[in-house]
Length: 311
Image (cartoon, rainbow, N blue to C red; front, side, top):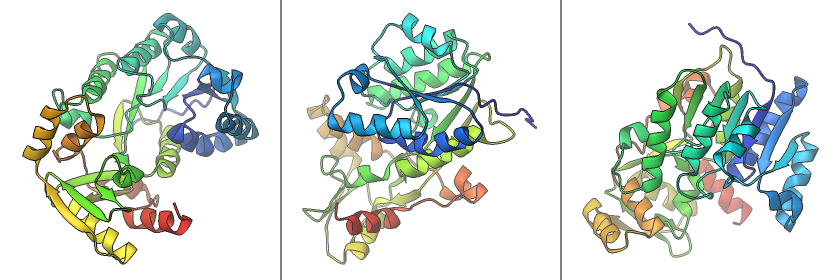
């Protein structure tokens, strides 16, 4: 049994977007209570030429006692490596906004820097099951990141698998649930399942996993707000809204044909990927949050809160 203690010193979070802020809001008070410092890396313009939202973000970070640093993740690998050498733990919350190849570059830099513990940007599906060749280039890169981490022993790693953000089910451009048009599309079939988690729950659970004693080492840790079939999703939407929705099944063949016709369309890629089923879901009962008694918001709770907020 692993009895190693968590070393709280010198933790760096990459990114202060939706997920990064969710992690920081949970992690910063815990570190502050232990008299430990948390640093967050943001784009240079966030601190040098901030927009209104950037100003609010930086103000919140400083209120939380977080040190804010500006650096472009498009910087060369040596620059990133030099920065990472200052930290024992790096938690990567940057997503794919920096473009293809960035996650491999960041991972290589973390390993070259001798970071003791690394949480890669893997807050998504089960890339081991999906493998390569899914039609999603970012999925291929994520699979390669896992291979890179498993091919070495100097840096401990922890992958937190979360499924998609719950809100993405209701993103009009994704077109699974369109609340305005009152439509629901079943990707691959009504029995196809998907695991989803809210950023707030990901932030809470990632913090618990990072600080867990004994320390979690070289593992994929599964969490879930909900695991639901598209058929069950349609039922939840109609029950919560009290309205009928037009329900259409989109077969895997149809979605693959759509992808062949528009191979560069990001949402078409995602619809085809999430119609596959395998690797896109896992049983909630077997997750870290279920086993340790942490409550999470399921799709129904998320939708009720969203409608109540009037968004």
